[in-house]
Amino acid sequence: MNLILAVLIGAILEVAVWIGVAHFISGWYVFFWFIIAFVIGFKLLRSSAATIMPQLQQLQMTGQLSNDPVVMRKIALLIAGILLMIPGLISDVIAVLLVLPPIQKLLVNALMSAMAKRQQAMMNKMMGGMMGAEQGGAQNPFADLMRQMQDMQNYQGSSRDSSVIDGEAREVNPDRQKIEMKDVKKN
Image 1 (spheres, rainbow, N blue to C red):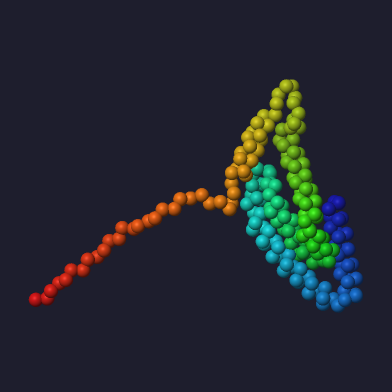
Image 2 (cartoon, rainbow, N blue to C red):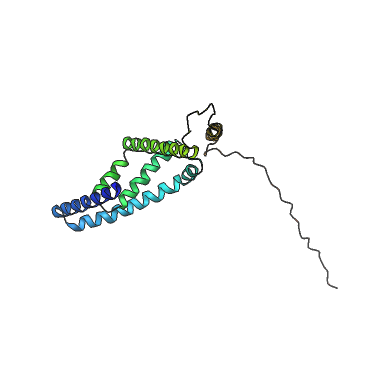
């Protein structure tokens, strides 16, 4: 209910700002800005989504997102692109603020803490409230599995580098079959 109320208040504020800005400058300038902002936002969205799609698949499978700064910057740019696509001057100002590195860092920290809380709540629900607590001397049966997954992810993250290609070169001499032409003398 609070989300619906927030969206409704936000929409009313956006329209009020549109009218106020259009009153001081031409309404056509505001209209053209919305078109330009939509195109810029769409391009930001496409470029960011193409970069972070493998990380989002990893997040879906493991519940953890890598702390790669490039990925975190692309997530902030993805959100900025979505905000630019929404027609409104307030959302455009927020999108421009998201492009600034200190704001990106704050956003990423907030997203990571929210995802950690969500994952913890999900694990607590799966375990029936026993996550992180011992009851009757029994340990969490998933703790060892989670530790192994963390170790495997850390190992894969440290040994993989997308800029290094491991391979071997060798020279190939194909066996060519030559067609011999016989001289046939006509008699």
